[in-house]
Image (cartoon, rainbow, N blue to C red; front, side):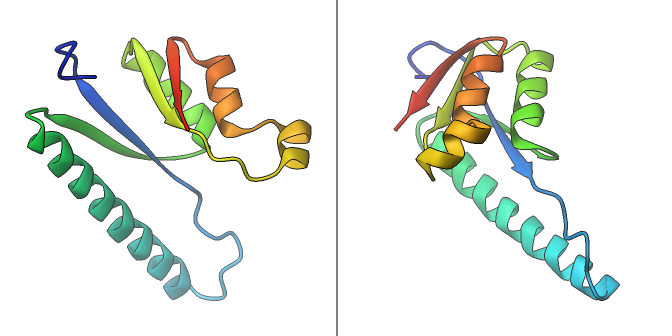
Length: 116
């Protein structure tokens, strides 16, 4: 889609909070190192996939709550389209709390494409 419309492509990765109750500082550092390695690999693979299609991928890894962080990034980046994946976890949970994808589509400052 980015190639067809000559658009910029951005990737927002949201890093969840580190453990609140770690027994040692080493546990927190270990969790942080694991997450950093995970996101580094994820972004590297995404950049390569984009590059294989002749597109530059701009990526950010931002700590925070997924919905709030993505909505803020979309506003600040003045994005035209937000593309998100749909993953259903539980009908009961989704009805009570609302799903991430549902909240993103409801709160987004731009159009949202949900990929299932």
